[in-house]
Length: 250
Image (cartoon, rainbow, N blue to C red):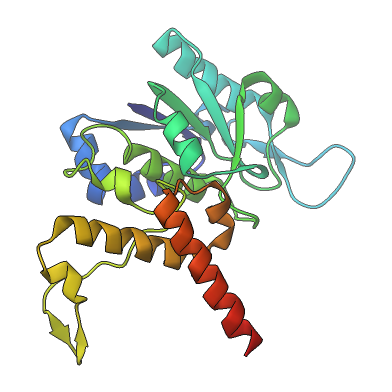
């Protein structure tokens, strides 16, 4: 899978993604990440890419020319117009479902804005998707782009050494992941749950599912509306809800 990032700060993007799992995936050729410096497409002798907004207001706005030219340069090399995702708090909030959808693409372009944003004409000409990392404002789109590339990459076959990992982590079934433990068996008088030491795989799986349900109820109850639960797990959830209600009455 190929990721392309249109940015004013290519070193920031590559510095983050060339490490850990994404870095190893790039070395293996499972994914590729390329940055295009929007400044390289400015005709201004000082490589300016921004100007004051028409109508007045604070800050500066990125000009349409360098942004569109950077994208069209890429299109010329690829002989196609790949999907373009603009990082903006006005977009849909990114989640695991969107990550799975995007992981099906062969090429993805991430457009990172700065200052007060990008001239609307550039967005109308090239953007296909508007995504947000959350309901808050950052100084630029680079960090959200890196987060999304990291998340999407994990769903690309060959990126994770253990392919099961991507299937059982948080949000994969609209449930948060169960608690994890490793050696030592006892740490500061806190013991690993006995079921995990039993070697009984069915009991371990049931314990983990119940822990996921309980943790989701405690920390992200909004996810439970779309959770994929068996009848037995649904009864367990109803019992947890009943206990919670009784506790709140005390």
